[in-house]
Length: 122
Image 1 (tube, one colour):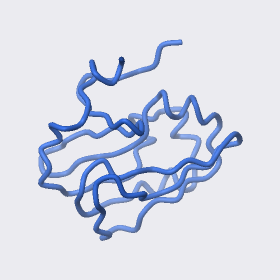
Image 2 (tube, one colour):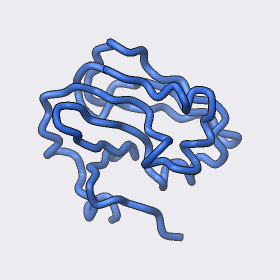
Image 3 (cartoon, one colour):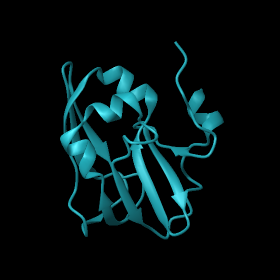
Image 4 (cartoon, one colour):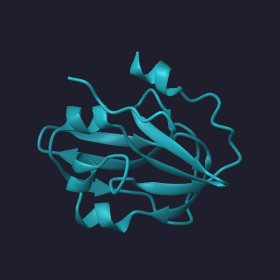
């Protein structure tokens, strides 16, 4: 099976994706990660305003198969939380790169240490 790996994003080893939008980055889990988890039934995300450190656990995803942690891809401040996925976690399965995004952050990280789409595909 082949998974979507959009060319405009950066990726972590723990299967989060990051999209830079000016000074804000948007974060979610990859198509591969949602497929591995199966049907997602619950999501816990950090609170708006929370300061997070790269690599720190910032949330939990629960599926019918497993419970998995979500990790901060960079250090920064959470400026938005996708309330929709808290109520409709299935959006993460259906559209992990669109409606299934999880948080937005402000960071001064250049994201250069995160995997490129080519590196992530491997």
